[in-house]
Image 1 (cartoon, rainbow, N blue to C red):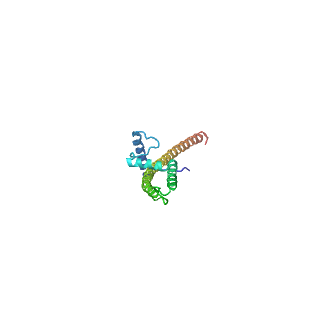
Image 2 (image 1 turned 90 degrees about the horizontal axis):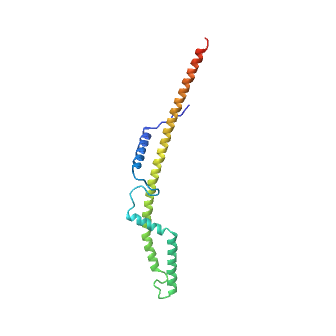
Image 3 (image 1 turned 45 degrees about the horizontal axis):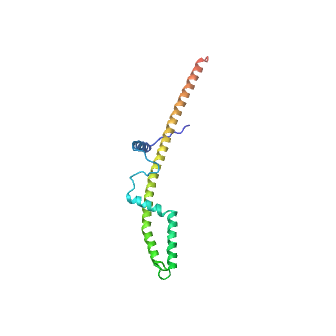
Length: 170
């Protein structure tokens, strides 16, 4: 006939927990979209983000490529009095130094961003679970209303049947 949807005690406890969490978030100041939940980033985190933004841009790649080209051409054209002759050992040293410092800084930025993504995913999961539980509660309410309606219709049919049976001569 009708499927009965019931919430387990664990589902009900989770739903109440999520509702309390929602109520506590309403009391907090509004959060701007795009701003990560949690504590503000530290000075080191902000620096790491800025470095990652600069180093990960086309502007940086183009400027660095131009500087490298100028370095190589300048040293090749200077001949013997060049400040960094052909195997460009100084240039190699500078690029190694740059890579040695930028790689960990970029990793710090990526780790922080992945932590923010993880928190957002957890929040999305909680919202999805709450939505599922709310839908389950709606199913329960609709099933209850349907059962009450069927019961009322059954009683009405029984009452009409009794009237018809009472009005018929035996």
